[in-house]
Image 1 (cartoon, rainbow, N blue to C red):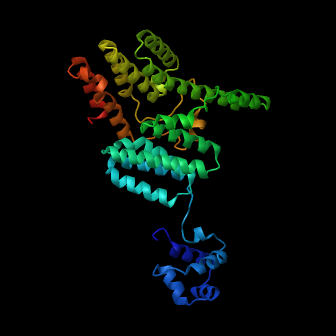
Image 2 (image 1 turned 120 degrees about the horizontal axis):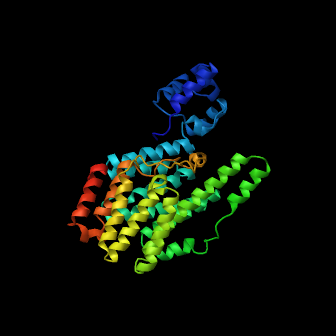
Image 3 (image 1 turned 135 degrees about the vertical axis):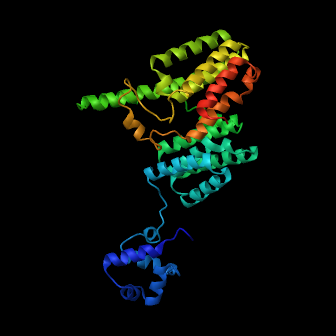
Length: 371
């Protein structure tokens, strides 16, 4: 088993204790030659000797054989970033196989499994074959179900449930989504206000401000994201559609969301462009595509979560995220997705020969790359 690295551990621990191979051999009840072979990697100790060796050096058996069933938060974050980069630079199947090996090795590390589920959900569409995409979504669902069944962390269970629901939606299983999420809709939480009041009562005004500011940001981004879905749902009602879009844009302008959070604004402009296209309002559709282009060709990259002059107390919140303030996909993959959302969108097929559309696409390709 290639994960076992007992040789280096034995050498290091024996030197720490300043003992010879003879001494260790005598304690275990084997020959010096056996200890020598263990330390050179020519053979492994019999499994019955592992508890004795671990006890002698006052370490766990996992530590003795160089195996850790858990990963730290920072290690998970680094691994996720590494894999996102590899998905954009190496053959998809190779990286997927590497992911499978990692999952197998750390199958009881639920924080890692949650991030691997998120990784699959963010990259499954890179697989060329539909059956492979479906298989990855099902694998992601299985990971989420394992977390829900085995983990005792409520936050993690809730996140896994949400990820599973998204996978089911992508897999065209609306009934499964309803079963997972229906009935879980609750009124907006007031925990921020209660927590801030508690900090205020203890005299920690700075922390109270941080909590409230974080709450404002969190609910703002959630609300703006919901606007996108609501636009799509009302694209058959032009008057209501215009009203929703006006309110969404007004909120976005008030909080400078074009700069503060590029992702949610791209969703808004894309949903608006698609709605106008379906309504056969070509000029307004192109206006929204132009806004979409302006956002993604600005200084948005590398895309990270960040505050601004108003939201100047939220960096600590971002630092607590499993991935920190980093994007969940590699920059190259993000750029490809942003461009394909326009140039491969059936809603905009009628615009393909329009000079204005061509001009916008040329600007985007020059900035993002031609995919």
